[in-house]
Image 1 (cartoon, rainbow, N blue to C red):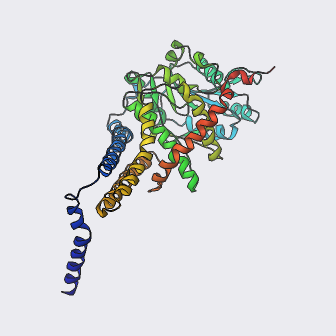
Image 2 (cartoon, rainbow, N blue to C red; image 1 turned 30 degrees about the vertical axis):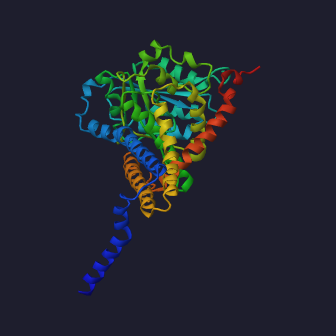
Image 3 (cartoon, rainbow, N blue to C red; image 1 turned 180 degrees about the horizontal axis):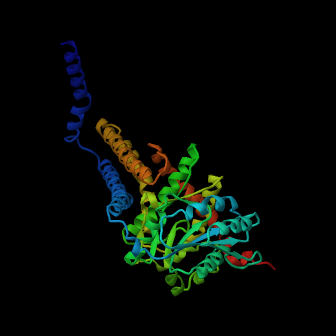
Length: 415
């Protein structure tokens, strides 16, 4: 009886402290300011939920639907050419070329384009060629200047390919499964011209590394989710497939030869449509980008993206810019709500409830996304990462603007 009495008294106190003021607040006059701030906070919360549900979480639903489809018939899979870009990647080639030739695929070749490597890449390729008869290689001259070396290397590899369906990788990329090539190529059997894949990076432990992993995931989710929604605007050459005929029909990289960076992303931005583009994000289709220095790799990728960003055009740019702004506006609106209703305990509770609700929603959403895309779990740290990310991006954007001339090929010209 004592226990029941204690519980009853506790519930009575909770009712007196919280519930009664909560219901009384509906009859208490609130200032117009408080109502406006509360309404803004709720609208921004719903806006974030819309982005999460109809863009980010949609990629997971898309993947589940694709996994339920019947696997492609072996006879319908087209011959494929895998083009590998290498620059001082002898050890990566030694590890990853056998993985490529371990693919369960009926007809494919691998072409390695050596961008004037100064390590023992040529010797490694020569040794591998004796083991794998369908391995071919070509080389970019060391004295090539006044142009983008990567664009030249990819063009040489594409010209050397004997098949129409191409799959582009870096030498540091390792397929997640022997079914990687089959999963990427099956879309060409259905009439696609472009297939966007997902590439991940092994993430070291540490708070800063987790932030960078979060940043990479969000970056990939944006262009993949837009493609799923029928608005593709870019792709990454670490796991990207398209037709050779499409490349030459649109004159390859000819429109961006004046830029050092922006090869596959700008090419896809130019030629991709909702009708000719597919997304492949099954776990078997992932590739892992190996790196001994994750921090340097992340910084290079960020700078290259912000060098290229002014030339990327897509309808969803304002949507994601609004999403970043909404993070700050939401917290600002909640803070203003609580400050304007400082004499109303229930208004404070409403503000806290909105913060908790957003934390729970974002925690659930990103837990699913991190798990689906094989990224370490971060818990509620994603809320802090969301606040930091626009500031970090702003620093990179400013740095890229100040160094914008470094993205011009004439800067590399030898005189």
